[in-house]
Amino acid sequence: MLEGTVPWPADLAEAYRRAGWWRGYALGTEIAVVADARPDATALIDGQTRISYRSLLASASARAS
Image (cartoon, rainbow, N blue to C red; front, side, top):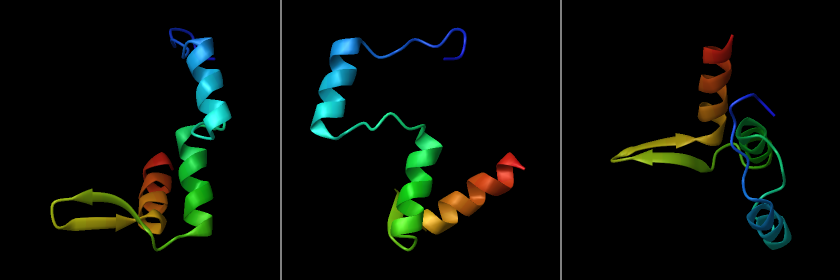
């Protein structure tokens, strides 16, 4: 874990894991998994603008380069 990062309380993290809400992956990994499975599904909505998971992942990858 990065220095200065505050972890989730252990009891909440375990409850989220049991419920299937958290698999322990980084947010970018979760987005990539969904983008692979459903690339054209809507990831973000801002007013009339809709962004697919494919576009979101491509945009994030371009910015990370």
